[in-house]
Image 1 (spheres, rainbow, N blue to C red):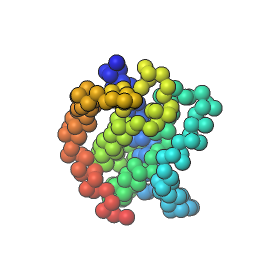
Image 2: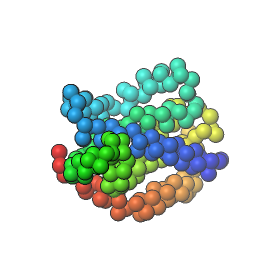
Image 3: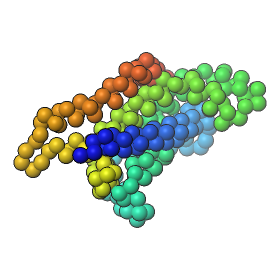
Image 4: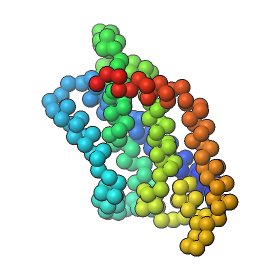
Length: 212
C-alpha cells in the first residue's frame, strides 16, 4: 500500500488550501475590520451564520456542482473552496486586525500608501501570530479530513492519509498493530508543526477576540 504517496497527496492539498485561506481570509477580514461599506455588519453576521450549516447539508449541493464542472476524482474540490475564504478564519483575523492601532494605517496613508500596500506591508507583518494559528488549524483540518476526500476522490492513487488509514480495516477484522503504527506516523507531522509554531499559535489565540 503506497502510504507515503497518501501522505504526499495530503501535504500537497494542505499547502494549497493554506495558501488559499491565508490570501482570501486576510483580504476579506481586512475589509470587515477597517473599510466602511453599507450593510457591512449585516454581511458579516450573514457570513457567520453559514457556520451553522452542518457538513451533510453542504456536501450534497457541492458534489452536484463539482460533478457538473468535471472536478470529481481530482483535488480541485478540496483546494478551490479555500480560495473563497472560511467564516471561522475570517472571524479570527477580523478580531485580530481590530486590535492593531489605527494610527499605523493613518501614518501609512499620509506617506502615500494605498489600502493594498497597508494590508501587505503594515497589517500582515503584525498579524503573524493570527496567520500562524490559522495555518495550523487549516493544516489540521486537511490532514484529518476523511469525509470530503471520501466523497470526491475515487482513485486509490489520489487518496489522502485519512483514507489510507482505512485500508487497515476490513469487513471482519482490523489489523490493530499496523493501524496503530500508521496512526502514529500520521500524527507526527501535526506534532512537529505545532511545536515549531507553538509560540505564534498561542499568541494568535490569546490576542484574538480581545476587542469586538
